[in-house]
Length: 344
Image (cartoon, rainbow, N blue to C red; front, side, top):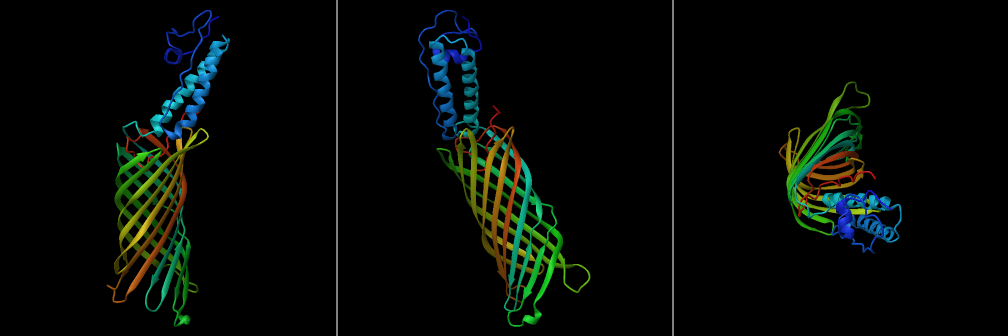
């Protein structure tokens, strides 16, 4: 009896001796399976599946089953999958790599401008394009995100508490909205599928909004604001698995020191930015679900009237990305996404 299909390295590692591409002819000796161990928590389920397959192959060889090639092929396939899983998800494989991605997002912004006499509120919510990217060099990493395009629609109101007769409303119907954030950082801790990194960078958000007032012809400028901020914060990343499927969830929190220019106004303040991203394999690419919240504040009186600006910005979207190069090193990039395992 000849059983074909067991690779030389698999046969030798599991049972010892040489196979010359095939199993020996005749009675086979009693075999002892050697299990595969992994230190990557996200790959443990796959390792367990491989060890079960190794046990089935060992039992088949002890029984001299004629279908050993099927068991051997299963072991070879799972061994390859586990190798790839550890290379992609485990921290002990150093290298340089990165990712590029794109998708669609809904941007919702609410700006409140408060003075001693009135309060303006402007809301807009365009559907936009989103581009993301990042590179890592060992524990060092660079990341970026851009949102742009789309036509803003929303509302404008100007309320005078002491003189309600002056209250005004308008409809936002056009304009431009775009945002950017870019960071450079270093991963300071990595263990058990967790990564913690620190970073610093730059954040910007810009709105040029136009609209119409009831009873008036033509379009008027309703808001022109340009936020610029330096930021610094921490990023926490966790790789985990649901069944045999790997996932990566990342949460980033940054403090902002911002400057706002809105018409003649020029003021400074502080704020916060929080990002979340869930990544998962979709064949040869990666699926991503994005969420970002930014709270921007600035105050000043350079126009002769003390003003306080507050802008709350939500961005929620989805998209695809492609990872290239090697996975992160022993201290890995907190924002590096999960690279898809090959389809089985």
